[in-house]
Image (spheres, helix red, strand yellow):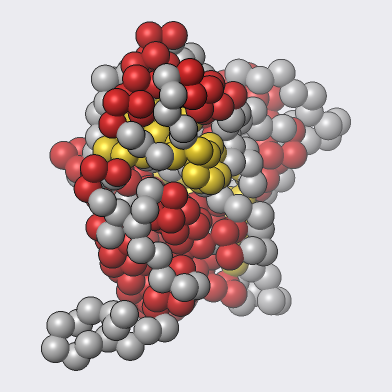
Length: 342
C-alpha cells in the first residue's frame, strides 16, 4: 500500500496527517457496494462541472463529493488533508485532466498511482478537437466544458467508469447518460440561438483569463483573455494596452469579470478605455473555472452555461428570451422548421 504521506509528498504540499491514518483504510475489493445494506459508492469529482454530470449519471446509486467548490480556482487549488483522505477513500475519482488540476492531476493520472480508480474525463476527446493556444506549455486547453457539445462527450467515460465500478447499475447509468445528452443538446441549441443574435461586430468576449476558447470556437465569438490559460500567468503591460486600444477602436461595449478570478485586470481595462474616451461597462460576472453556489440553478452545469450565455447575450446586444434557457426550453417548436417559436 502507498501511504498518505507519500501521496502528499508527490503532490508537493506539506500537510500534516492525523495519527493513525498512514495506511489506506480499505482496498476497493473490500468496500461496500451499492445495494449492500443500503450502502452507496463514494465518488469524488475534482470540479463542479464534472460532479454535476456524474450526479446526473449515477442517480441514487452513489454519493458524489466535489473537491473544488464555488469560487475556487482549480489552477491554484491546494488540497487539504481532508481532501486527500476523500481521494484515497473514494471508490472512483473523476477529474478533468489536461493539466487543469496541475500537480494533483498528474498524480491522479499516474499508472499504478495511489488512487485505485481515476478517470480523466476530458482526455477521451480526440486530439484534433482540442485547442492548443500558444501559451499552453505543450498541453491542450483544459476548459472543454465551455463547448457544450464537446463536454457532452465526457458523459461516455463517466458511464463507462461507473459501469466498471457497479455492473448491476449499468443499465441505469446508460439510460441516465442518454437523458443527459439530450438535455445538453438542447442547451447547446440555446447557446447557438442567443449568441447568433448578437450583432456580428459585437461578438467579442473579453474576460479575466483565457478560459473561453472552446466557447468562442463553438459559438462564433472572438475571445480575448487578459491572462493566459492558467491564472498563474501574469498580464503584461503591452497586452493590456493592446486590449484597451482594441476596445476603443472597435467600440466594444462590455467586458466581463469571472467568479473565480480577481477583477483587478478587468477594471484596469475599463479605466484604460475611459482614458481614450470610450465607455466600457462590466457586462456581468461569468462562471469560468467554477460553477455557482451549490443548490442554485447556477450551481449546476446547465445553469452555469445558461447564466454565461444569457449574460453575454444581454451585454453585447443580443436577443435573450424571457427566463433564459429554461424559458426558451418551454416554448413550443414550429413543426415545419424545428425552431422555437418567438
